[in-house]
Length: 506
Image (cartoon, rainbow, N blue to C red):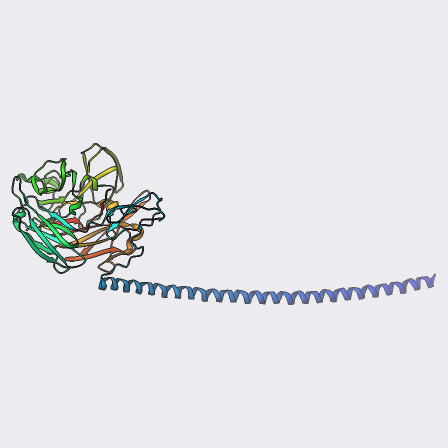
């Protein structure tokens, strides 16, 4: 029994030692594994830290490199723009981005105007317009031409009848007087844009054969201009080939001081008085100039400035449009706009916070006031005239100015500014294209902009001062924009559109 117990005791000791050895081995294994895990953990931490530092360093370098490259590219692009502007100004070249193409895809049956005739588009995807034409189908002319007529209605204070001529190059003109059939030859260039006509072109009461016919050896723009002491005004003349047989007259009511001043109408080459809302039809094409002998633009009790002659060449009914944006007129906070219809028309007019819908019958008109800018949409083509109000202290009188439609905008203009005025130009352009305008090869200094939107139509309008003489303005992206020229002096003023696109018909 004692021997058995001794054997059991020894067996227990052996088991205890064995268990202890196993425990020691397990403990060592655990300690070894712990050391291995710690080593791998530290390794991964080191690797992760290295990756983070590397990525951060690479990011910093990339960001610095990116901004450095962008800054260099922007500087190079700015340098290129300045160099291109100087080249264009020096060499009188036309560096065009799209080579006279309208970026609109058309079907194969579309007719394109090539400057002389209409041709089918066939396999092309867009019309390629000849020089001087624009539009999806090249259906508009830029208005530069070689034959014009100029006539004036009866003015006040004996103004000097004058023509202003804008041309890219020296122009040799032949000026034919209607009243005595005499012809004069003159030369116009960028340093000499004005020519004073004989006072025989100014009519008196009744019917007279007065005015001039102008022919040039190069394409030009022509403006009729009355230059008088407190009695100036001007208008954009229309090429003879666009004379037509139907006109609607928008003449504003003659707000005068009871001196008997008349609403006036001049039909080239016949002159006579007229009434408001006159519809003119003719068996042959004629030109129509209309306005007032003298007008305050508004009722006398609220008028400012002096009484001013109004004169504008009236667009025929086949040269009207249906979308208009009235421009910002520098120094003029108050303006009257007249909408004149040839046919029954639905109107939508937006100005300020107001949105007005109206229906006008054929030959009806509607006047509204605005002080910033306005948007006009019509279901049929209409005629739009602006009458900026006069200024206090003799700083400028009221005047009359045609508002071409959005579809009548051009992407470049050659225009002339008369001497002796503090003059401005107003520009209306798509909002995202303001920075593409180049005036005489330089970017104009734009200090403030007015924006107007209607649906997907977003436009901006602004004004900048302009010097006397000849100027060229264009959009480097060939975006079409509206342009008006006007100026003030003591109890005097003038204003006219710089140019417009005329429709070409089959």
